[in-house]
Length: 237
Ligand code: FPP
Image (cartoon, rainbow, N blue to C red; front, top):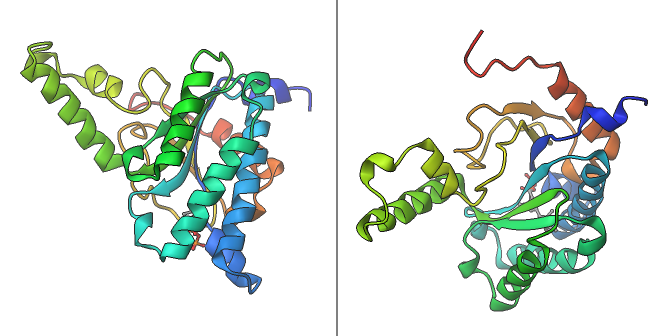
């Protein structure tokens, strides 16, 4: 495709990886098998986004609500998360800057160290920004931002009237990044599920009927084509 190099360049894409459990159930497999396949797809789609010249991608890996799942499932997801962080990337070659969204202090110390190390090692990379949301919720992120600003006011570093949208944006995990152009949700669900509530104000929603473990590079092409067909007015005419 001649214009392939242009159709995704500079885009910012949010992805809610959904449908792992249903994929496994359909095959009579344990839910964890769906997550394993989902992690492989995560790896491949990240590489593809890189190849397409996407500016930033935001993956929803684990929400603040996902702790309610059985212990075995939560530990399996965390284990996959750790494994894939180590093996998924050649960070220097792929030139990705990795950013973790969410409250990492609730995770096991070894995962926290891994996350800190990866962020530190990749912070000056100039390619795509790969955001991974773990123990993340959009409302807790806004609460955290409000608290950070309140503390600044308390320390006398800013005044209440300096609290504006730009100040709030700068206090989010995604500070300095463009808001997502579109948020992709496979598996047929039509909800944001507490994902990027602040940043999604003008994002297009692209829903697809495929379960995340079945999601392919071609599906991403279709999602981007769908987004490119939409006309965005940001409330204007
Ligand atoms: C949603 O499907 C998926 C999750 C809650 C976990 C996603 C985790 C991974 C893909 C693996 C680890 C992460 C990385 C970044 C390597 P679901 O279980 O809610 O599916 P269902 O709605 O069909 O039950």
